[in-house]
Length: 530
Length: 108
Image (tube, rainbow over all chains, first blue to last red; front, top):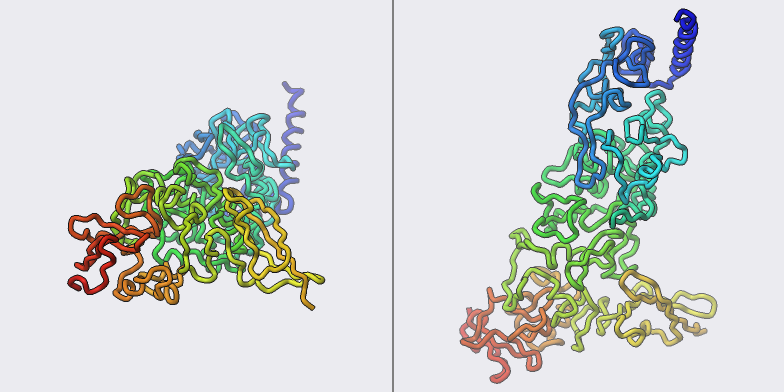
């Protein structure tokens, strides 16, 4: 035994030296609890020894030679209706339990096993003390083996590796632990976040190590994040003007996931939504989240349209608490009556709206890209995604059960002919209707319709008039062009093509693929009169 | 255009078309008597096979306002543009007797 002592001594010396090397400069950042460190809570001890000790440390199997007394707290762990991998209590000695020995706030900082309680001054930042309720924190300590899901990176379950090209984001023993995302020894690998992240997390890069944004199909479910990369929330260069509410980076695109989600301290719990501070009373968490930026206010620069103001008019009422939106709900909203932003919009796929004429209604607007709907053909088939705006409405206003009238919407006429389901719009508006506004189908009535305003449809009800602003010809060389969108009745084919107004020349049609629609872009070529 | 006509007026020319009777020669009469579009028209559409009311032109009377004319069912006949109903005590008799114009019944 004696001959091993010098070797053991060298080993301890080497560890201390390595520790010293790491402490130089500001690498440890606020994890340097020594008197000379930058932590808000300090004590007279070598910075390494608050967490690590070569001898006489925590008597729990752990490779970290842990010094700080572990917490025996029982936690409320993260749960949600869309969580595929259930969470367990962190195992004592596993990485996350080491972090929680300070960060759950139940064991005093400096309560070491080998040295007893070190006299400390100051306090941890409140946001760094998670308490016993971890339902506002990203799930970790999962039940193994992990279960695959369409919105998760496949290699997590196949090879227990993440998609992080730098390799910094890792599974720990095939599990998610604090140290999957955090490195306790370096505060500023991400120099903006300064949250001991293992890598630069701008543009959601840390999140995307595990959360898949490419199309996947797992157990019949397609990836709801599949259109994330092109969405406005992933690409917007608008500046986040109010950092405490939003992410730490400059723009919406750089903040990416954390524009709306927060990995810790989410008051909303499931889905880890941020929401505005203070929260807006009587409004569901999902809507609050959107309103943070979409209120026309100062959180975002340049400001974006004030959608919130639209709701101060007579609008869909917010869920009242018993009928909240849930991402796991069925597309056909039976009884669970509510309409939040995310019932008609997919925040992971939304595109910016730059025109209200392209694509023409009833096709979904770009802001509705990726939203779900119900088919007008049978009233039950789920469309992922919806192609037309009315398919979103049919989640509630078609064959769903529990439809009701509310006094907030004003007077409801009592019709002479009600039908079997008076509140279902399907028999009133689909192709079997005797007469209807042409929303779910092109106009089919042979009767003339003289009352429409000039800018409305042509009287065949199928083609849109040349938009006023396009009537001035664009001159190119010796030709002038008018151009316009024409919606073509699929049953009649090319026969219903209408020449653009005032086009006396040749018309070139270019078919354009629109989901669920046959559309053509017509260009009128007219030799310019000299 | 305000009040109960505002939404319809976003697409339909109420001033120079509807109120000028270009689509039906009694529109002006009814509108100027104060009836909103929804007394006679449904906003969305008429289901198929709608007995009595023909289903055309999205005619579906509001029976909070309109009642049957005697024992005859409430009807609308587009071909003759006539109705069978009583509205505020004002009787309308359908095609066989021709359209009853205002003043044919007690007004309220």
